[in-house]
Image (cartoon, protein in one colour):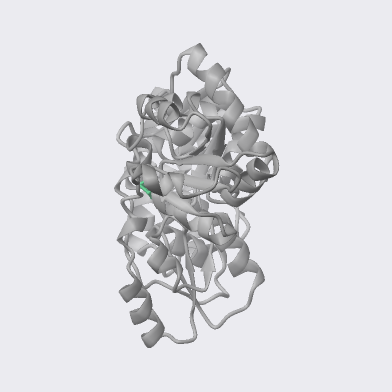
Length: 358
Ligand code: SF4
């Protein structure tokens, strides 16, 4: 019989259904569970036969996240696993740039993303050409790209970072003597990280006089105009409303949210930081300002914690990754992430630097 948290890879259909009913009770309707159990069992069987590993981002829907994944986590955690896996096939249940990162780290492997549609507003918001233009304008700057970028943008970057280690990457660069840091493409993550560290921030489109006003020996973070189409929608008024209705709740927000939101919440952190906080810190209740599937997944993971579901912003890109597409992806070995060798070679170093700074 499967245990409480892990579904045995050789579970029968009935065992799969029972496991899902226990684990997803109150989160996924029973009628959905019964409809999905067969797909879950087929994925787990195929995964074994093809020596595949399934990585699931924290924003996957609960029926997928808790049943067929071998590893779950944020971009940084899953990148580390992708680099080390000895499986023949990596199925990345996340968005396309995540599959690219896995391919760059482990180019000999077949890397699949179950949907071609799974993009990202941040990754789409900057190109390698944009970065080349910025480098001409700020020739003295070191370039830090959020991992939420496509491989071509990474080839023009010196470092990558995630929301989990952005401050550590900035600290490392400042300690190494860098004073102008292009932090791309999420302007809110850049501004929030700079504010947390007490470093001035300017958007790249600011007037020349604003840049001249910051002495050359002082650190300065320079941002781009990208945003996450999910996190940018949270508002300070929403935080006020949550506080007034639930004064006891601890509000945790992802640093891709606007600075006016971050100024009002209790905890700023990556999805991994949210997991760690809810696991380790007792509170009457918790409210997460991030993609909505995360709250459901943590409610499954920590049934003894009271996680309020007060927001409902679903990322349409993450939503493209379904159990059905994951099964089809394994059956047809689609959709393969393919990158030119020279792109892999150039994009590898900034990603390796990101992983080294944890
Ligand atoms: S939640 Fe935002 S950053 Fe994450 S994949 Fe969706 S659009 Fe991109």
